[in-house]
Image (cartoon, rainbow, N blue to C red; front, top):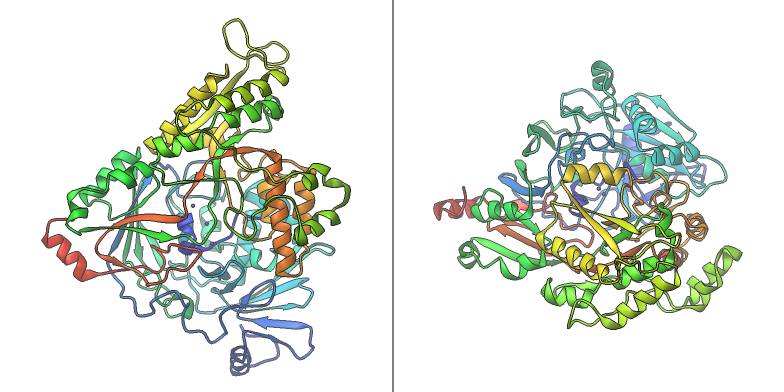
Length: 640
């Protein structure tokens, strides 16, 4: 159930992160909740808490004053201006219709629970004051803050929460709706500020409480008055309840947010030291070159860089040399997304393993990294790269025990063979002759013969023609990498058409799975949850937008199902290591590259805490504006 997880801006740099107890008075429940981070009721079966963690080990007690990674005294003010490569024609990110990429419009909404940037397991009450649930987690009740309001001044009630829950079921992604209906058969409003969710019997309790707590809350009143639906493309959106409101929208060009001076939650401990900018501006550009020029000119004040060529060679302009622009590398505590060339396994021809093996061998990371990427990347192999969850060699220990517990669904090669790793190539030339010979043999053995014109045919004799979908708004370096890859593949007789299309066409074709290969990514593996089935499971493989390859594997399904039953961190880690191994064994993509740091350049008018939390760069969350620094820049003519 991946879709609605709302982590607000603590998660946006990785582009998505949330009454009174019956029988007790207001003073009584306050004292009770502050006594510890998680307490049991008198009947010894009910847990009442200010937050939720599946294992019950919340980092912050109920009386916390701010998150550890923020500066609670950070000043408010200034503007944060960033660039997005592409375009948009909608402000509604919750539908397949229209393009709302990069608009950040989901961040104006809040949820009952909110995650943090220093834990992958914890969520704390935001729209709620506390939640209660039995030890078996068969249901949960959220008790809401009575002072919470939408930006139009209307109160947020349990009726809005129930409406939002049902709206996602009816109008959200099918994969999400199917998963929720199977696991959450009932939700009911107990009173205006209390809502209860019931969970199905005989299923894992994973990702249930935190999932319903993370659903964005929309205004029932607005939807009913306007007749709008969630599954439509539109510029006008319902009022949110977060610290920012939409100030300006120019389709395809600009989105501007301003601080809501009447934000109801500004004094909450959750929000201390956060949401520090008065104004957030997103400027759209057709390509990365135009965006970079806008940054150099001062039209954009922050640039999060992904192009190694630019990072290595283009940050030598006068403003950097004069100290007006600061260039930083900041450690990223999350594993990288599994980026690469993805095979569309829904296509019959792409089910041929021999073809996929040959296509993989056409990618030369070593030459690419040395010749096009300035040696700044590492070769990617795993869905949990460089973490304790990364599968290595053959299964052993707790991972081996976990795999054995699954029975016959695990093929013997999983036990006998070392986990799949990315192949190596020579960095001296694009075409590695050894790998080329291996690739040609794979193709020959699979029946893809070379025709009279030197081009491979399918085993039935028909032409082998493959489409490679690529987004034109990608960086010039990435495009060069892909073009060289296609050229290398053609030396094997593979007829690959590189379809370079604009962002809108890319969006449409990707949604329709209209490609044989696509340059895309899978979300990294770091925690157990029912969202794993949406990304990798068979049931949603034909329609899930989170599964570009269409992975559909009984082994992967079995691992996901069993992982949800883990009752300890050790069991959870063993299951995720097994899942990494199984996904790599499925061979659904050619992993390409990754870097361990954020590359960021900004005008010298922003500051951040000395220690950045592991799971978010947080530029829009807990960084702040230095008004004296901006004054110096303007006096020097460095800003527009």
